[in-house]
Image (cartoon, rainbow, N blue to C red; front, side, top):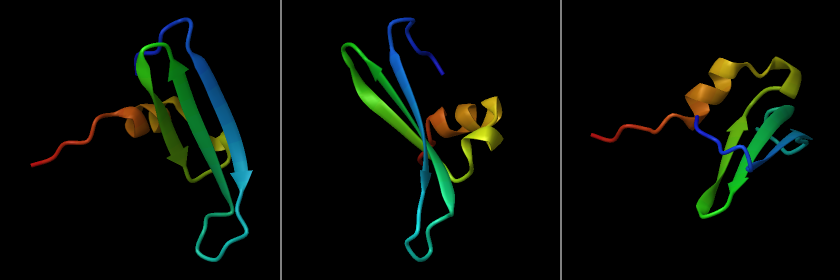
Length: 64
């Protein structure tokens, strides 16, 4: 994932109490000048998030 050195990266761990929602999720938001904001949600606690989780979430999806 390419992120400029001036980007703001926000990482938030949220607890969900709604039915069917995972108990914890981590939301990563990347805010850069002249680029649309990017947001990724991982259904695990922030302490359990790995570099590979982030890379997989940020990878472009293929459509065919």
